[in-house]
Length: 302
Image (cartoon, rainbow, N blue to C red):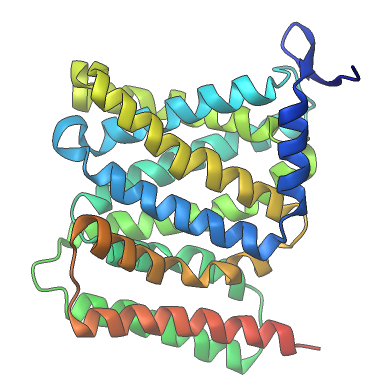
């Protein structure tokens, strides 16, 4: 039987035919569909994670998510720890940004509804999508997105201001994550860089999670749900996004994420019962419309 091999820690390891077939199937999915599947997966995972906060806390839930995601990805890809000088800084920076992004987002998620948290956080990828543009129409889309977030703030009611701040921090990290993911895809092979970056993120987040949650992280059912959150929120979407970023530039990827706030709001409503006010839905629609407009702007640009 013909074996496909990958370089692993300590030597060459046989790569199962099923994994090779999965890799080919993943590569056959059009990049826009990869991004869409990743969006749905990560938002359902976020809704599931929020139900753990009462027991494990936001930081503890992040720790479980990143730990299990790192374990799964390291077992699947078995990356070489030694790497070139060009790849190592990108992997470390990717992991630190990833860990910070998740810690900040889960802190926001603990304080404000999921749809609102993601809408504010979405300013990060939208900024990447519009960065460097000199078209007046793109300025209009940026103003519309900003107006949507201002509308959220004006209609926040009992929304936590601290939650909004955490969402903004997560958004800034999300923008950096997009840029670093593109660099990671170019300087590493398959999912090896992702696996190492996830391990860095897990190590960075672990002290915060352990201090916040302690031994509650060791409860069997908490561990089980944490594994599910890791698969839905990290392993599946990040693998799909990394594959998509091998084929499309960061600017286009940021624009394709335009459905993220709407999907988050629907997931929060269906899974968590987080109903939003009409003006809050309008604010989310403003951000989504700005992203759709930016998509058309890029398509029509000479």
